[in-house]
Image (cartoon, rainbow, N blue to C red; front, side):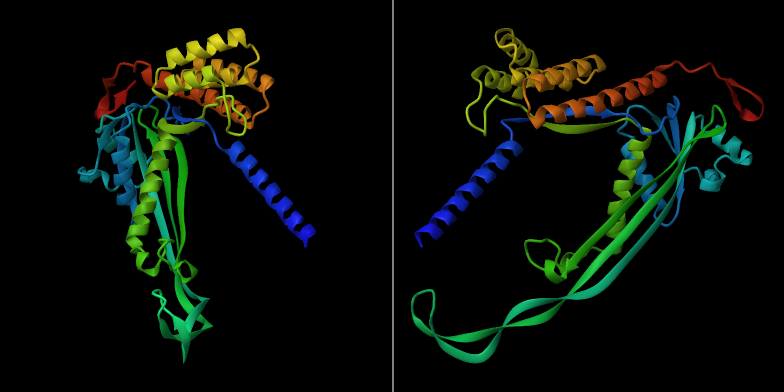
Length: 372
């Protein structure tokens, strides 16, 4: 008996130790948010004025409207909304580069136009889960209530009962094309698809899941949600977008205990956005402790937060020094993240330069065509 208790105690202590280690390695001292400009996935080759044409399909107008509204928050384009220009309704996705429609497109005085073709599919699959439930037997026994009083208590039994569910599966796809009115060529094509797959009811039919049968949305609502997601992805396809990274500082502690006083002081400044003071503190630590991995790592976060290419390269160098002086996964993750950011920043700077180039002088030619 004593041996059994000892083994149970040993296993319990081991389990707790493993849990503490996992918690310590997966948590961090303090977190901060770093913003990054992600470049457009496809280059629009310097297009500045963009006209958004009709999107075909049953949910075409929903996607076009969401897409246009999101683009209004992008500083890289001057937008032209064509919804009130009826003569453009005949220009559909498959005929965007048809020469017959060129005069109408030229009359927009845009650098380029974009249109899309939207297809949607939605299906509800019905079924039922067999679930264990308690039901009364009609027989009673003596028992007590919450007040300790003796009462008759019905004897219950466990039975299997079918509980209905609905699995909603939906998808919305938008094919898009961008036509450059300066070169008279299609310069970008692509496809964005968003899917929906949720189960309502059945085993999920409880208050905590939020997936009860009563929460099953109308089909239009589901497709409108997908339309919003597709429009976000479309903006990212053709325009630089801002994304947020949450990163962890390292205070030099072990298993969440202790930490370097100076490092922590720098983190306090960084939390308030006073990066200059934080950088000064961590640099002073490195002068006296040249092998302090935490100081190198936190300095890397500071320079990463400044976003420019030069600062990102400085951050990568500092993260490499942190790796040489420490073996934390945190440092390796930061290196990989920053390498990807440097690649994205170079691409973004190229796109920005293309947008900043001065346009050539434009003259009107015959039939209202613009000649560059």
